[in-house]
Image (cartoon, rainbow, N blue to C red; front, side, top):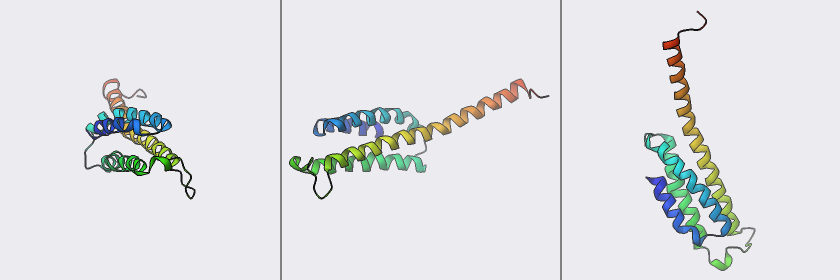
Length: 131
């Protein structure tokens, strides 16, 4: 349920974010929706499950809340080489990319299981074509 809860929370934050960040939150939301069914079949004790929980349950909300804590007038200001809006966008890009990578990694296991099952069925029901 964490991906759908995080998506709903992120949707609620959209209007408080700059326009470029809204595009990224949309992309993150799509990835969260795609990740949810994958996580249902994953044992919550798996390291991958812990990594996803940390990313979307802790790191993403901390990034957004950290940006929102900066006074509005300073969000676009370059203060000592730091620009909060740029930091937010960079962080959201990292989250977006990491969600894509995590989803692909989880799917890789399913694809390998499917290939193994297909090979098993071929050998069992079609026999060894070389013999």
